[in-house]
Structure formats: structure tokens, C-alpha cells
Amino acid sequence: MHDLLAQTLILLAASGLAVGFFSAFRMPAATGYLLVGVALGPHGLDLIGSGQDTQFLAELGLIFLMFMVGLEFSIPTVLRARWDVLGAGSLQVGLTMALVASALFLTGVAVQPAILMAGAIAMSSTAIALKQLAEQGEITSRHGRLALGILLFQDLATLPLLILVDAWSQDGTLAPMEILKQIAVATAALLAAAVIARPLIRLGFSWVLKSRSADLFLLWVLMTALGTAYVVHLAGLAPPIGAFVAGMVIGESEFRHRVEEDIRPFRDVLVGLFFITVGMGIDLSAITSFPGSIVLWVLVFVPLKALLTFVTGLVVGAHREASARTAVILAHGGEFGLLLLALALQSGIVSPEQGQPMLIALALTMGLAPLVIQRNHWAEWLFGRRERRIAATEASIRAQSGDFHDHVILCGCGRVGRLVATVLESAEIPYIAIETDLSRFRTARRQSHEVVFGDARHHRILEAAGLERALLVVITFDHRNTVESILHRIKALEPAPASLVSTADDLDMGHFALLDATAVFPENLAAGLELADRALLLCGKTQNDAARIVNTVRAEVAQG
Image (tube, rainbow, N blue to C red; front, side, top):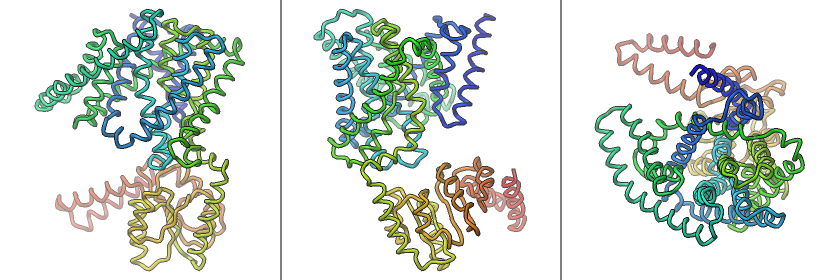
């Protein structure tokens, strides 16, 4: 008991330090968990044993991971983006698996490990890619939508690969027709489970919601995920597949968002433990034993996978630039690749000599993925498109702002920026708005605002907008790196124009203030203080008293 408690404390402390360190550098938490497993596992300091308790919790992590994937997977969503999901996704996974598996087979690797290793190569990290694209405001772009479609199909393609791992681990001599038969039976069982589970799950949630008990709701969610996983396990399939079915049924219901919020803490902790157990299986001696293999696998994960993804984009009709940026975004390994490889190593389908170098390379590419995705726009330089686009935008902006002096440069023309533009127009103050998101740009143009399509973080765009002649720069988007870049440009001028920054919350107020932003206006602060002012008036305070109290609070928040 005391040993287990000590090991748990060590595990929690090491995980907290690692995840905190990686989060500070905007790196994926999964990499931190992997390093904790490597450091504390049998191939490191040997402080944590890979016992049955740890493996059981890791299996729970897999169940909840697949449950969350099922929540995100809805048939209407796939049908709306069917060409990106079914067309581009199937082509990317198929091309990658066919090429890698064929190459492995020709080098002497058996068919079964070749297929599973190729499947692990084909997968990218949905969590890392979507998080980074959301931070950069690129989800709605053409390359963002294409990447999302391929990622959705990759998540779905994990299911038959999990069935193969389960079948081969039970009997490695199954013939191809037997495997196909088992996959067909599994598919039929999953469809039947989905049809049967749909009314039962909806009936259960309707009953639970009537009780108005948050505890009962959470218990029912856990029961649904684990119960479906167990029933599917009794049918001879892997439990995570059943959890996926349960998630998919709930994902198409009105309960989805509440379920996702309630279950996410369990998922995050248990999936973190899964990554730790994967890290425990990484033998760092493979770095010295197979350095060439690791380098070769990194080359397969990054440039080769990027090339195949680029070809996929061209085949489905995407522009070269969008295809190139999608290729850069997906050129790394993913959590489902780790899952497939870890299960294949545990079951003996893939030997350590084959799997260990690939496991290390996969982890390396996941760690580097955020840095690479941040710079996906560099891919446009391959075709000279970026330079031509910047030059054309620069000429358009110079023509529009050539006569402006003491004007306002509005960086971003979304819902906040459009309100600022409307006020400036009413006051007859000259301004020019720069917007990089196509949908927001079109909305602003339809509302007759003075907006141009361009990227405000590029120094040539700001110079063309007359930054040296501007009276004020207003930044209305919430991408920290981009805001920092613009503030540095402003700070370098003498005299520098004033700058106003609108952010989603008040967490970055002090940071932007250090960069000499004239004022920072968090949206949550503005909305909260406006709401508080109205509450004070309704509670009987006079307008002067309410204004005085709200201004005092605003000053305290700004200072602290």
C-alpha cells in the first residue's frame, strides 16, 4: 500500500512538472507524459513498475479516448465534408499504408507487422493539429478544412486496425479471408450495437436528466462508456471499439456537449497514463543501437508523409498552396499511431528491433509538430505564391492608404473589429482594416467596411497601410504570437503610434503591457463590467455610484 502510494505521488509530481514545462513552451502534453514514462520506467530510473494496476488504468484511458473520438464523429458532419473526409482521407491513408507496407515487406518484414507499422505511420495527431490551427485562426481556411477532413478519416481508420491487432494477437496464423470475415462480423456487430444502443442510451439519458442530479448524470455517462465497451468485449472485439460506438451515438444527440465537458477530466488523466505506459516501453538504448533506423523513420514521418499528403491534396482538387500547407500540418505522428504501435509491441506482432526505433521517431515528430504547424505558411514559398500574394496585397493597400495621415489601422475585422469600424465611420475618422480570414473578410465587405484581405503580421503589409503615418493601431484578434509581432513593429518606430489590443480574456494584459501597448481590453472584462454596471443599477445604486464602483474595479484589474 505504501509503495503504491509512493509510486503514485512520484508519478503525479513528475507528470505535473513535465506537462507544466511543455505547456509553457506550447508543446503537446503527450510528449511530457511520454518522457515521464521513459524516465520513471524500467528502461530509466525504474521507479515505477509496469504492473497490472498501471496497465488496467491505461486500458481505461484508451476506452475514454475512443469514447471522446466517437463524440466528435457524427455522420452528418462527415456527409457535409464527404469529399475531404472520405475522398482525401481515404486516399491519404491508403497511399501511405500501401507505400510503407510494400517497402517494409520488400525489406523482409512480415505482412502483419508491415500493415500495422504502415497504419501507425498514416496517423497524425488530431489533438495537436486542431489545437494549433485553432490558435492560429486557420480552422476555416481551405488547408485547415482539408486537414480536418483527413484527420477525421484517420480517426475512423483506426477502428479496423484495432480489430486487426486484436485478431492477430489472439491467433497470428489467421488467413486473409478469415481476417476479412472477422472484420465483416465486427462491422455488422458494431452497426447492430449502434442501432440497439441508440434508443437505450437516449432513454437512459432522458431519465437521468429528469432527476436533475449532476452525480447521477456523470455516473450514467461512465456506465454507458464502460458498459458498451464490456458488451462489445463479450462479442469478441476490443473494448475501445465499443466505447467508440457509445460516443458516436451520444455525439448525435442533444446531450453531447454536457457529456464532453463532464468526461474530459477523466479522459485527460487516463489518456495521460496511457502515454506514460507507452513511454515505459521505450528503450532509449535503441538510440545508440539503431540510430540509422530512427533517422530513417523520421524521414518517413516528415518528408515522405508530407509528399504523399501533398499528392492527395492535388488529386482531390485543392490548390497547390493549400495542399502544401496541409502536407506540412499532417507531417508528424499521432496518438493513434502510438496506440497501434504500443499494442503491436505488447502482443509481439512487432518485434522490439522493428518497433523501438519507430516509436522513438514517432514521439520526436509529435514533439516537433506544433513548431512545424506554426510555420505551415512557409510552404507557399515553394511556388512563389506567397511572395506574389503579398506583393499584390501590398499594392492594393498602398493605393487605398496613400493619402492617409493620422489614420487608424484596424488589424482584424471580425465581430469586434466591425464594431470599431462602424464607430470610426460614424466619427468620419479615416481607417483601413486588414483581415486574413476569408469568411470574416467577406462579411466585412458585405457590410461596406474599408477592409483589405491580408496578413497584418507581415511587416510589408503594415508598412503599406502607412504604419509610420498612423495615429493609432487597433488589434482585434486573439492570436498571441501575431499580436506580439505587431506590437514589436510598433515599438520600433519613433514616434510610435498608439496601440489598443482586444483579447479574449485578461490573462495576457500584463504581457502586452510590457510590449508598450497603450491599452489592453479583454472581452470578458468589458462584458463583465458592463453586466456588473447594469446589476448595480437594478440593485438600487445611482448611475454615478455604479460608474465609480465599476471604474475602481477596472483600475484594480488593470494594475493587477
